[in-house]
Image (cartoon, rainbow, N blue to C red; front, side):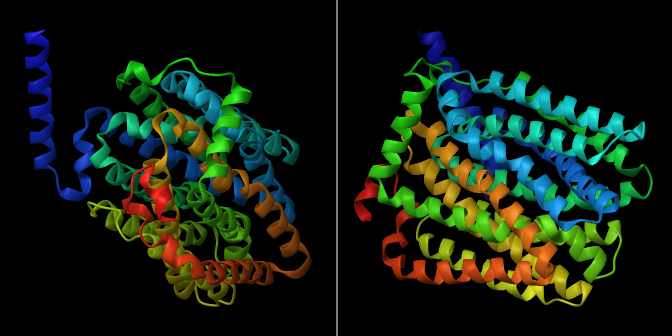
Length: 433
């Protein structure tokens, strides 16, 4: 027992020393397992963003249809609408690492198939849509486990920082991936982007094989259906959680689908090619990185309720302005604002939900967050593609931004309730609403 205590003390001291050597905004990377997890996700996400941009460009070249761009987005995210909640229940019952290994391997194989079909010049729009659906299915089952695993890898006092750094790596990949894809399209083509994405999954698969997850996190619980109902009951009884979930819901339905139309916006409205599209998407990623790193530098999430709503409202206004942009650099700036405010709203919402969720329900609570961020996206992609096909891209973007702005201005009336939420752990946060 003494030996074990000495070992634990030595490990804790070593971790504390490592954390002190890191800048404050990177302190959660002092946790070995989180550092591996973060790095693997970063490299994998770069490949994913490369594929997303290349696939959107390929669909536009093949079909010249904004509607099919929207349909591809719909099929890629509709599994999240259907399977996010059972995925969260499963993530609370099963080994999250093994679950992620299965889903990541599946997405790696699908990217490889997409590359092979493209290289052999036998790819058609039906096969593209089918692969997007299957990839979305794997992602829907992966995301709740991914979200719920972060608190397993860091101490509670580093959780806000860890989530912010996760947002930073996701958005650094959003900046790097499309930029690399824009350059790669001119050299190795769309198939090359798909192959690179397939290889990138190995980074996370290797990381998942290295990290250690506390065994007590994987315990038997109620059946999947009953577990889902327990999660729904918790959310229904906690008004704070409902308010928080409404924010990404509106953003996903009416704001974030602007990404689906970026190939049309870049080619037809700004008259730029795939490299220009890559740089535009990099603008959104760069803004998001700055915002995420700023959040990571904060030691507390205190007084951020007002910031969540303000970020969402500014996002909405920037989207309206983007719809009327005629200059490449003005559009680049607005996309940077969109990226920054998107993270301001979503990352802090994510952080607050993690903090107020009881550990045994965290996977299910985060599955609702996944549902709002990813599950509602297919509906947003479908309507924005349809409206753009009928009334034009500029009108579709302005309409989505306008709806969001009206909602968040109405929601700002409730700012007194949201003013202190981000600093309060569960269950005290509920008492402030």
